[in-house]
Length: 128
Image (spheres, helix red, strand yellow):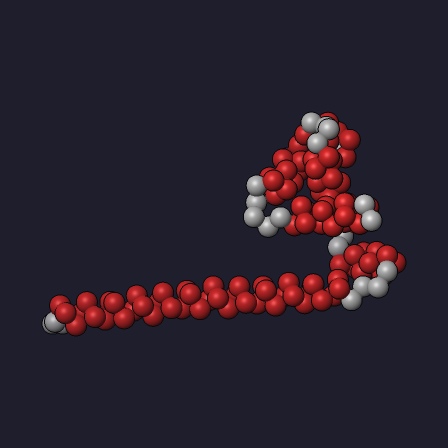
């Protein structure tokens, strides 16, 4: 029979091994995702004009995905302006109230601040 302390050490070693494998799997996948995102970022940075942007977007996304991106950004603009209700925005943009709510959450509550950053850039550009 196994000694209890040896069995405990083996269990502990197996747990450490499994924990490290899980951590390594997460780290590897996170790193891969970051590299993919950086690759996409570099692709967008390389675009020289609106025509190249439109052509790249049409290659990259389906027509419905492009429409969804357009709708979300328009919703963010309306929400930032603040003079329409969420329901009115949904009607005006012809999207779901869920889309408006989600964009609103990302605009005002999430830590990414992507919408806010871009809208601020656009507002600064308009005031120059």
